[in-house]
Image (tube, rainbow, N blue to C red; front, side):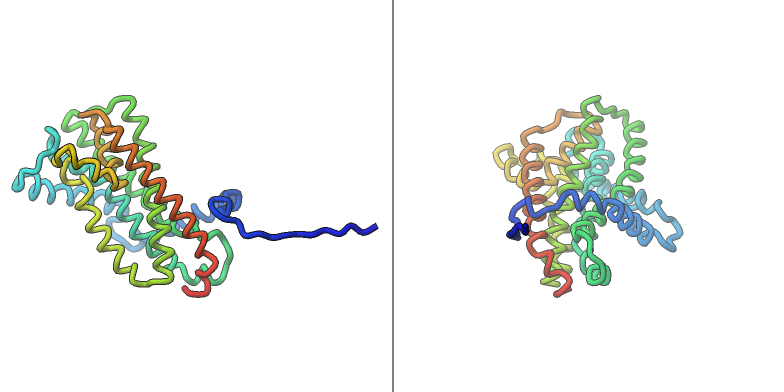
Length: 276
């Protein structure tokens, strides 16, 4: 006796449309693409990975002279060089990851049009590859902490991986938005560098959040990187307690950016191969 079956295929909406098991299945591709980006970045360079140290270190020197010595920008009572370097570390990683992931889909157009795989892996791998530079540059911060006699607390040491993960999450979230928009509107390849430049000056990298009157500080918390950088500086240097209100608001907005970026990316993902 034959049974009659009826199969109904419905389009899934929301986070249900994201197949996390499929993403886990393609995890090796994520690592491969991230490793490829690292190799391409340092291929045929004389200094290689030393550029990961030179860039933030030289930037720290320039900022220390311009803003610390000449402009007399306050630094929460700690030496300005280590103050600004502790802010530059997460910011440099975020800005590099944002720039790379924002243009990652267009740069991988040949791969997208030939082979199927979860497209989310491309901007995620672009953000992941920048972590190597971050950890290399972190060595200089450790040396500066010994030089200036700063010691993080045990809770601060435990917080550092969490803050790095939050920075990665925000970078991926912004990268999902920008990379998807860049496929359809190539104007965003010009918007991204301008966005990164402006974003830095509204983030407490070269100045402390205490520079602003207390009643206006809530406005800075709308910037997801503001709370992350302030908390990273406090966790590594241990010179003050973490501003939990600022961190929680910034982290919440960062998670919101990631979730909405993931949903928008999934919504337009099926069109990439046709319009890229």
